[in-house]
Image (cartoon, rainbow, N blue to C red):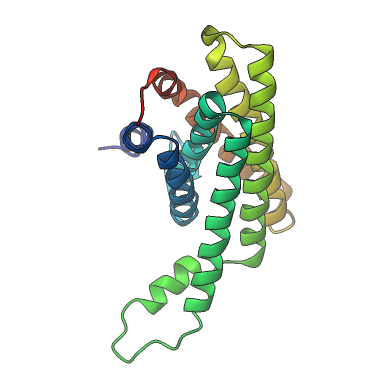
Length: 224
């Protein structure tokens, strides 16, 4: 099975699981999902794969579901609840970063088999950590704000796709600008930096388009 097919299946699984969380646990399920998605996405992003002839990182799908989750909350529960969800996700990501950095300072036991692997995953470069945290809180906060603006400009249900894709597309662009600028600018030649930037955003934008049917399902869904 090719990476492209796995990636499409993976996207459907991610979005479907998000809807299941919403169906079973309502708004609380989306809060939990956002915290979980931000942590796992920041682990998955360490793995690079070839997709559609491009070198890309994993994590973009799961990270994209966090935007879908905040858009659902904004659409059905209001702007203030969406803001709360954003800060919950940020606090979760920050706590995970702090906890794992402290955990890595412990001297491993003589029979330990996990320390080196955990160090590879969690002993992150400071610029990458700063970029990830800054990109998350800036872009997600912007997403909540601009979604609310789009909802006032295009209030009809038939324009739900505009609210969803418009807010996420612009917010993901902002996320990519902030993250790449902090994490990578100056570390790579200019042409490589822009290649990373463009590839990252293209993948994120595709994910944003793919989540549209799931947004419509969530809009009609009766949850607990």
